[in-house]
Length: 233
Length: 378
Ligand SMILES: Nc1ncnc2c1ncn2[C@@H]1O[C@H](COP(=O)(O)OP(=O)(O)OP(=O)(O)O)[C@@H](O)[C@H]1O
Ligand SMILES: [Mg+2]
Image 1 (cartoon, rainbow over the protein chains, first blue to last red):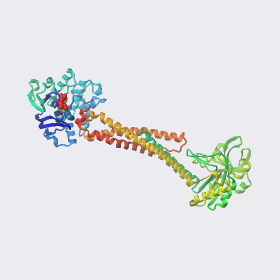
Image 2 (image 1 turned 60 degrees about the horizontal axis):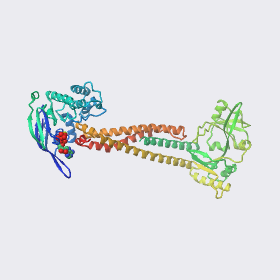
Image 3 (image 1 turned 45 degrees about the vertical axis):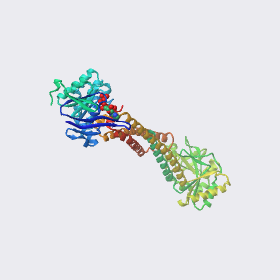
Image 4 (image 1 turned 90 degrees about the vertical axis):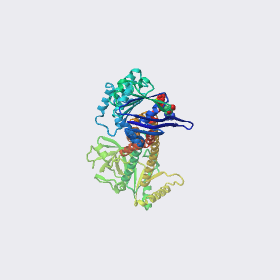
């Protein structure tokens, strides 16, 4: 599903060059639930943005569902993000003064053709994350946990191949964290590919596999012992 | 933006008003006409104002022009005064104008019913009168007045004819609200003056208009013994009237045009500023949209549309303001202005174009943002 080969990322400033990723080679299969851990500044977000085709590495290769990503032009990358990737961010990134429903509909606007059943799909996605009674609320009228669930519904609307979540619970209390992790587990059980970045081991434990980033390299590649998450290919 | 569009509309509407005035004037007076006014005539607010009474213009001047100026075909002196006229128990105030029979030709006056008066009647100062259509309506209840006796002041006059309706002239004077009598009758029996107010002169050939004007001016200056004093009369010819009109229209156009240009520019810069601010403040939104699949051109289109909408709103309010002030200017201000819907459309189009032009830079800037940088910004 996702394959990287020797990805390196170096930030160059006139005075200093900071190597952040130093040769990441990994492979994530369809249906896997993977957590990426590491200390602050270890390059988790950087790697995540590269996997999500939002950022480009200094060198290395990325293959997504058989496509060599770096042969694509900017428009094709947009289309790829639109179709194959669902993002969930720590800061939610919803449009304020816009209803939950409209926020969820947003990716469909940029799809090749706007489906006739868009509204139904958005409602279904919101129901899926337990927000059937909050559809017409404005984003800024929702709690943090609710906003993050809207963001998850938005990530799901285009039926993506992979969900990339960068610290999805970083801004949430334990209750909301629990709800979000429940949803991820359920999505995983439905066969979705999920990659979660976190520095919270308790969150990472929900995944099948944990990758640990240290000094720009993957130093650990452990399979979680959690029994209920091990049933997938 | 609002002011700019409004200004464009007002400007063009005024321009059209002025143009219509010029055409009206040419139509009314014919192109070969020269008018000599006693005293100085100035244009105030697009209309003629005559200075205080000047007594130096006399019937003899008209005769001299007829006799001595080769380029002149016909001369029609005129004197007029507002007086009371009465029929049976009805009274009204109107312009009583004394003219020679030449005036019917020179000023293109036609007869509806009855007849004109001739030079014998003028020379013998007969009390005959031609009335305008407004008089027929107001004084005679629209009945044919020919043959009736009316009083002008205290003197009895016989109505011999009714003039064809001509409407309001370029100076806003109703040419149907007047009566015509022989000039000699007017001067001897009614007004009792020796001076006249106007001489209308028909020039034989249009090409000689300028020459005729010079001839007339020299003759009058000599007859009035002016030497180095300024003219005590004003000569207007069609060409110079049109010229003055054009000039005042051009000044106006220039003035309003520069106001329009400046305010459209200011509006454009305003849009630029608003959109650049939006572009800066909404970086995260841009990043998010890019992350979920918006292409650069989608972002550009969005921002262009937004500046178009802002400009369009500005243009719309400007159009409303412009049309309103044109109406006000023509009804209250007495300006000749005709609302130009073409200009209204052009103003709207112009503001849309400005919205697009000044929107291009911010929109391109928004589109050029790298998604990752946009997302990471605060
Ligand atoms: N645009 C940039 N320019 C320069 N350096 C950068 C830039 N973005 C990130 N870095 C550096 O790259 C390193 C890794 O950043 P990254 O955001 O990937 O860390 P992280 O593992 O996500 O940390 P955290 O847990 O705090 O989110 C940091 O040292 C950071 O300073
Ligand atoms: Mg991070």
